[in-house]
Amino acid sequence: MYDPLKSKGVSPFDPQPNSYWHHTHTCRKFESLKQNISTDYLIIGGGYTGLSAAITFAEADKNTTVIDANTIGFGCAGRNGGFVLSGSGRLSLSAIEAKWDQKTAKGMQAEFDGAVALLKQRINKYDMQVDWCDGAYYKLAHSKKSATTHHHAAQKQAADYGVKSTCLNQADIQDRFAIAHVYGGVKVDGACLHPLKLIDEYARVAENLGAALYYSTPALEIEKTHNGFEVSTPNAIITAKHVVIASNAYTPKRFHEKVDNKQFPVQSSIFVTAPLSESQKNACGLTSPMSFMDTRMMKYYYRVLPDGRLLFGGRGAVSAKGSDSNSEKQRLCKAMVKSFPALKGIGIDYFWSGWVSVSFDDMPRIFADTQSTNKLGYAMGYCGSGVSFAAFAGMRLAQLMMGQENFDTTLPLYSSPLPSFPFPAFRRLALHGLYQWAKVAER
Image 1: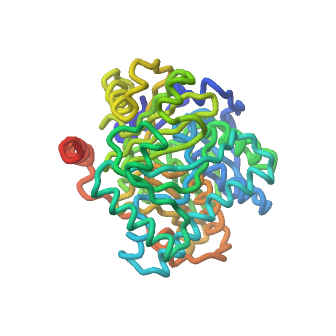
Image 2: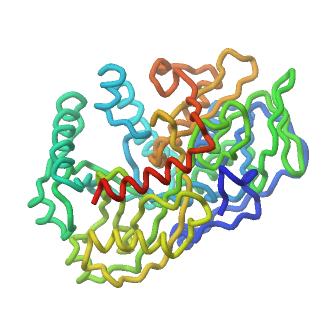
Image 3: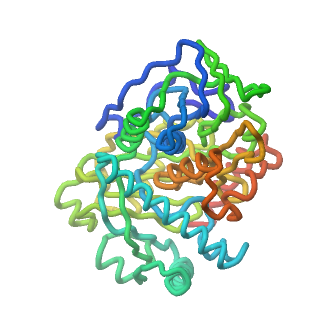
């Protein structure tokens, strides 16, 4: 498996993951770039961020080109769980308020909610077929203390930010589900979709709007010139006035000074079970599309898929070496059975891993050098909450690049670049220690 902290970059020959998404949908095919070209806006990365930026540029009649090192859905768009959430990064609205102020938190809430609204708007406008499923989203407390904390947080968000939710005690959860070791929770409105179908639809829309899309075309080097940038690929040189870096967690360790050591790629692993029988659904309470996430430091997340399977995910191995190991799959399986004893022995039909981009201060960034004639910008650091927000980030980044700053650029998302990680060579050693400590702390 590709490792952003060890590999030189994604190769066009790296295989697609063995994901449920890739087994249930085949994406469009695009040719690689074979001759030199010029473009006004070059986007490096054809995932949610990059294709959303391309749509925004193309809607403004800008000459736009997208390149990606592999095929559609090789990265996070073909590996995530398909949760549509209002939020990104790891800071709650209350944490943002505590760090800045309530005005900032409300501004951030507007951006987070705007991301979900943009997704729905584009699905309707462009008739995107993405297997959208509305359903409740449950945040489940793994301890009595966590239940109390999250109930207080939910009440504050309702009072200060108008976020509607329902607080549930342990008995409420047990009445609805047979989930063991849960002490309460909070229910909010939620939705899920097929993430690979979404990226395929973004590609369709971007191409129909006039953007040029080239896949299996890795960017090898970005060189600044007097009139913009020259980007080297295996078979061609691209001359661009402006460059967008939209490779997120799949950005190589050494790529460009603006993004090197600015994010930490951390693995998340997912499996999908065989279809649940009616007796298993009834025994667990998983009788309709719904989604869950618990409150552990190393969270587990799961959802009922439209065909009755259970998708279950959590933190992955520290490095790519252990990404597809049987021990990692068994660790997740044990966690599932611990929560749902009735599913002991159920078949696991799919298992895969992917990289999540974590920022040093838990806040994603959408940043561009807007004072330069020839701009270079990036968006990354979504911390695993990117299905709706990554596309919103791509739109906002395109707006910044075009000088369309009709939104609050003083918000933390936009007002500063990503901070560098101190002692970057020791990130994985520290992560390994964190995982070991979490095992003890969350028993």
